[in-house]
Image 1 (cartoon, rainbow, N blue to C red):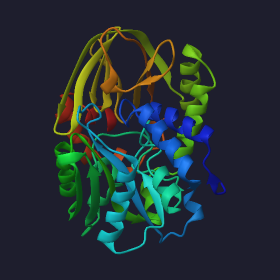
Image 2: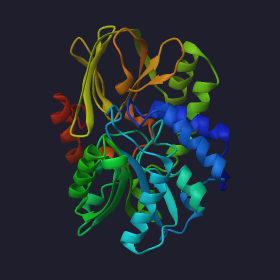
Image 3: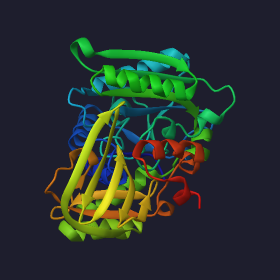
Length: 353
């Protein structure tokens, strides 16, 4: 694929397709559209494949870290640029390209504004092709590289809660510190982190996952209502599990995460930002990193876990992990143990049977 100048149509498809691939997390549609529009207003961001870059070129991951439902969270586009500036100063090396940490309504377009402002390209090798809860899950198994030091810069909040922080530490420690900063900043921070080479990203990330989000978004936006949901399932090789009323819903924002449970037409889902499990009468139907997602049953608009309310009429879809473009972290047993602790459900036996 040649270098592509991103357009409004591609941006809208990326946001809506990203919302589906967010699996309940990954940010808000409105904020993704706002960021995408602003990027296209200030410049002409370009999307490159890894093949357009030298294997030794340095890439920076840009991300949002925190709890989307936090009441006092505040970020703005220039925070993205500031975080990138802080990271480049921290590592004293030039950044040649930008990658996002994951697909999601807000996160698929992570990096587009920075690209428009700086002239750097967005590289179609996100750290993961679906959204995930922890920073380490978006770090392409760097925590297993001997001697690797994680460099991260975080910016967010306003007034007395405004924070900008640079951190160099062991990866999991750095991720935990950034999570704490997000809490102090009101619930959410913009992060630039973990410079890695194009070659490493190609081997451990999710090449082509931004293009997949655009394709999913086009399928969703090409139809209406149930037909749109069916088009998404056909594109991803998934299925509509059920559609019905939200009968039960609980959400608690704790430690920088949204954690809870939702019951729709007798189907129970747990979430840790993203949906982790899907069950009916105790029978497991889907387990992270499978894609489990809720969409408005009438309009097909994706609905993230933090926006669920009792009485909504939603459809639930399920896509096996084998049909997604996923990073190496989604096959890492160590990283999946944290999911079990967060949602109180068995995870490992269903992934590594």
